[in-house]
Amino acid sequence: MIGLLFAPVGPLLDRAAAAEPGKPQVPGPDELLGDRPARRKEVHPLLLDPLAGRPDLDYLRQRRRWLARRPADLAAFEEVARDFEERGAFFPAIEILWFAEKIAQEPERRRRCLDWMERLNKRAAEIEARVETAMQLWGAGRQHDGLDQLKAIIKQFPFCEKAHFRMGMLYIGMYRENKMLAEKGSPPEIRASLFGVCYPHFVYTTVIDPLYFDAYKQLSRLRELMTDDHEFLKQSQFLTERAADFQTLLGPHLMKLDEGDRSPRTLLAAGEGFEAIELYAYAVLAYQSALAQPDADEELKTRLRRAIEVVRAKHLNE
Image (tube, rainbow, N blue to C red; front, side, top):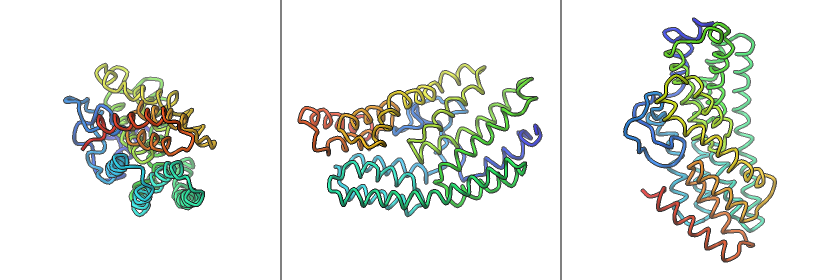
């Protein structure tokens, strides 16, 4: 199994690296999973920006930013959702419609958003079923066949967040289940290579679906591979902080909203949670959703307008 995984660090790692076009080429930002452009001058090699060679994925972020700089116009939300759908980015479209449904006040507009989301969910589920079939092949001992199927899915559906997530988990699982590596430890170069294969897939997952909490959690756990690299641990601390902030500052409010809570204060709290994990476009969309609620009082509206103004000025300027 060691040979299967790690030569030269291994044919399967080579296969995974070819799972989608583009390779990390330039330093990534302080907030790789957030909205702001790169700032850090010297970045650890393991934290190079995975989106450098993926303009198709970066496009999703740019369109969200474009939407967040505009007034809360349902037509604009539908435009972005339609754009994403046409590109096969079904979950990104669903999340835009999720905000649109919160902003819409007319029952027929809400129903239109919900019906649209349901259609997109069905299309996404068909692709996810193929992902699970690939994982079943892997579990049955047909590792190469399972990996080839995952690669084919990612090539055909580059915006399938679950395929990227499963690819990362697949390699982590192989590493952790290898008793020889677990008992004797593995050389730094092997652990670094494993990180280099898994890290982009989890980042891609969070770019496609910024609400995919398990991907944030796995990004934090990946740091355990390099506990002997102090500079890496220092620079990658934001991965652990972001996962913790998602769980404590954002997750509870998203759960309330998914359970049917449409109160402006819950939407405000969600917006503040999005800010905490540096999803600034989503923060603005949450604040706009709060403003649209009929029970938002004037004091709260003033606070929301100010929050939108500050986020746009600090983080969403061209």
